[in-house]
Image (cartoon, rainbow, N blue to C red; front, side, top):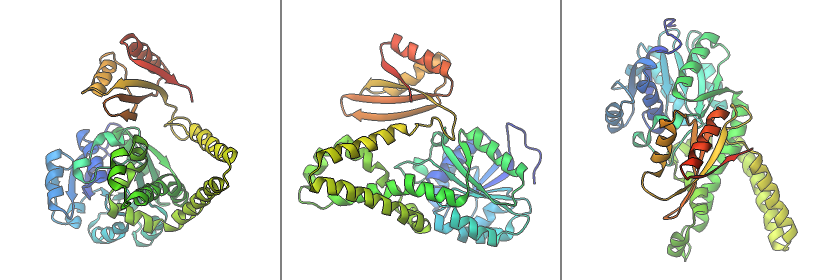
Amino acid sequence: MWANSSKEGPFFKKAALIGTGLIGGTIGLAICEKRLVKEVVGFDRDPDALEKAVKRGAIDSFAESAADAAREADLVILAVPVLGTLKMLDEILPVLDGGTLITDVGSTKGSIMAAVEQKLPDDIFYIGGHPMAGSEDSGIDGADSALLENTIYVLTPGEEVPDELTDRFKKLLEKTGAQSVTLDPLVHDRVVAAVSHLPHITAAALVQSVAGVDDMELMRTLAAGGFRDSTRIALGNPEVWRDICISNRWALLGALKKFKASIEAIEKHLSEPNPEAIEEYLHQARDYRRSIPHRGRGILPEIHEIIVLVRDTPGVIGKLTTLLGDAGINIDAIEILHVRELVGGSIRLGFRNLTNMEKALHLLEKEGYSAHSVNS
């Protein structure tokens, strides 16, 4: 193992980035922009993706094979679809040196970790990883180091991984802006099946429910922001999500069973009809949704939030962030909550520091913005 890394980096001598798509490219950009690793060598089965990754600065160079990229690497990042992870692992294991750390970015951890433990020699280490980040875009063109800012990055270290190595990898992630959380692999799979995988499936099902109907063109015209927002994640890479569904199918089937029971309940209330039960159903959903913190209390530090109403004008977000940046106020999270075309919408700004939130609110109000703090 390489013990010469400082608290600021570089944390590893050579990283092999196997897969330069959306997530792999995003991690590569974050590592290279801040020089968290001395050298990053990439491999992807798509030669065009590799060329773009070099041009965009996500990798320093590329190799002709995964094994060539991994040779002499002390960090290997497997950023491939879940079901391709073990196959790729078989390709690179023969060339790895003792002390090498391998990690992945897959949305399923239980089956992968169980299989990995059967394959690894004693002197090669594995930390399962899942950055809870994404985009409707796919491939290296959609990669953006900003996707890791304030993102929960789940880690599932193997039992034999030295604490020093785990801590070093966590420090690297911290420098990318991500916030690491360590979980048991099976707990991870059960939770993400409900809050990540199920929403994707339901978004796809919602689209399927209106696709091909007689009024399709009219539906496209009238599709409101609610429909677009609810189905946005259905734009994700089908190959990636196919592997997620298969590799986590048992947890996903359990989540689907609960979801079907919820749908059947509202269906029953509509059939009767029972207005009181419908209202109570919606009240319960709203109350629980309100209880979910937006990167707030829980496993992450509390975020103090401001909601800003803005007009739909060119550069409005840039003007907002520049205003606060010039005043020395750091924004730790930003989200477009709702935008009505040609009218405007609302933007959520998050601050870890309460004083910064209060300064931002005062400045925004002084500059004529309609803004208010969120107490949740």
